Image (cartoon, rainbow, N blue to C red; front, side, top):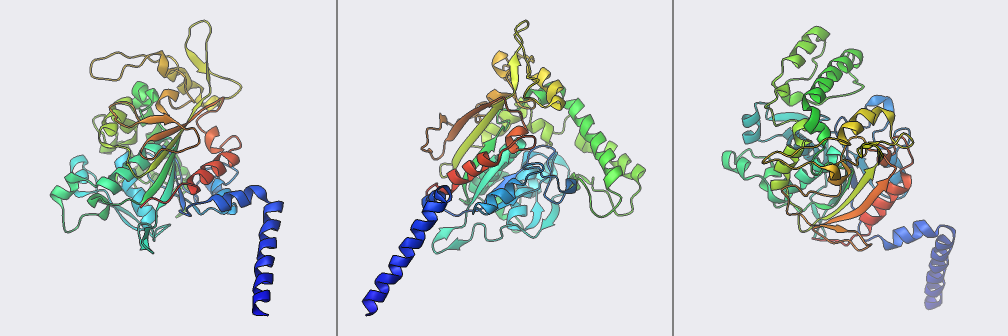
Length: 420
């Protein structure tokens, strides 16, 4: 009798599973083929913002919410918020604290070298179990980085895995765990239009970009910083650029204009890291980890001018706000000793970044880039391909539909085998 009941019970479960497969085959296939359930963490690019900023307009998706879309499809997803104009080192330190929880530690050696505060904001952590060992397995994450977020996440992985010998040499008792190394805490990284080899927009007019950011800080601070809830937080606390409670605008602006962060010689700032010179330096010490899967997407929204041969913005596909950048990217050339040669192969672009820079690090890098054929190679850059007629922000759904792309990324990450 008991045997018959068990047979009926398992028969009912089988029928239920068959019913789910019949009514929702795509979702069922995704769930059944998933090999890990690691959370996904989104890291924004230069000038980006968090979920509680910009009056609810999402960096990831605009009026859509790509984090929520992935969550509704059964994936655990989080959005990180780091310094929009900070260096990749500073952003990586912030990203570590934002995910794990705690106070940002930029490092004793680093902060002394560049002259800013060692400690920054404190965060409760969006995934405090990150790195913990449960049933013999490490709680890892999948990272998605857009634009400069692709550089930042690479630095984070490097520090997690290898730490920093400079920080270990000057500090032992109070050193951040991030700088100790030995942390295989990331399963995969997917980069979207990331300037792995820099962008010639930053090479051509770094000073102009700095002036733009300075004026943006002052104007947004004046318009939105009157209360406790900022529309946009520039997160430059380490440089003393946080607007104090009750601080008048003129005093705040004076501190902004006179901050050392804007000095041309300062290499601890985003615009240096985004240049081809800065990217080459970063590529020299940030290497693909052998136990991490890397994926990359490129985009192009420029076309060749039949008269000049330069690349110009495609008026049908590129955001008109990016046209000035695209014209710079589409014609800039350089051939100087000791610097990357910029020729016509660099001209195709997405409005902010040269397309050639987006498949993975090449300048001063030993990383290997392969064309993705459906089978991911660990420790190498699996290049998905170039998305034609797509600009720098279309790829994250700011002005176009990116839902299926992000679900594809989530499925691919979830179907990776567990390593470590």
